[in-house]
Amino acid sequence: MNTKKVNKLALGVIKLIAGIVVLILAFLIGRILLNGLPHVSWHFLTTPSRSFTAGGGIGIQLFNSFYLLVLTLLISFPLSLGAGIYLAEYAPKNRVTETVRMAIEVLSSLPSVVVGLFGFLLFVVQFKMGFSIISGAIALTFFNLPLLTRNVEDSLNNVPKLQREAGLALGLSKWHTVTKIILPEALPGIITGIVLCAGRVFGEAAALIYTAGQSATNIDFMNWNPFSESSPLNLFRPAETLAVHIWKINSEGIMPDAEQISAGASAVLIVAVLIFNLSARYLGNRLYKRLTASK
Image (cartoon, rainbow, N blue to C red):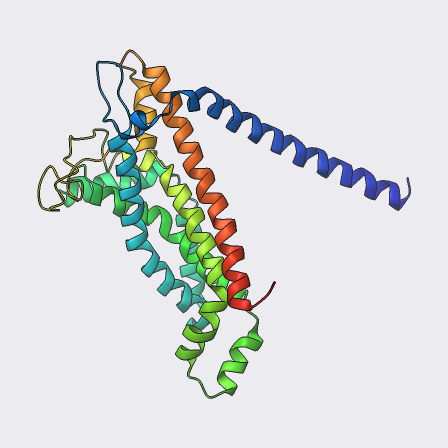
């Protein structure tokens, strides 16, 4: 068999594998959306869940998911940005730096249930925070921090060295070169990584079962005092998220319409994750064109 035939055969096999993967993904997403979207309505998205009667919704769980996501990003992004800048621009090449990078790789590969158990033992039990939003947010920070740090470092490393040399040649300090030249050039990749990590965090369940809890307390959306027990902003209240709610319904199913609630909640979760992924591509391309003045 000559080289051209081998090349065509290999290309055909690769296209076939890619097509199979796309078909499997389309089948899974399509099945979830077809089964769940008919049960999604404004009433379903805003009504609190019910335990023993039909007609409940996912309003509180949906709010808890977004609230936990925002808190996690507020904690993890500044830390990962600083760590990524240090590793990419300032860290010397020695054993300490290699150990830090190896630790990041190990942390990024930990199963989420292990992170959840660690958060349970440390924050829920040892620090006596209980099952709460703040416990879940810190646990998700450990879950999210290695990925964001690696994303920031890779985005900065992808900026050509000529950009750094140009800044230094103009008399700028190292810090000004990083903040005024390197970061704006790497911003599209960083934003893309943040949005993708947000989608990953939004759909997380295992780490939150042991930290944020499996109950959604009744909250008053008219009470925005963060120190009140009924306030949605209270950091020390239990917060069942959408992903945890889906798991709980499928494991217990104590309401008559459990199947419909599970299907609708799964469809909402899939739509949210798809929006996160599509937004990452859109924002990344938009920022790249704007910051690099390309068409």
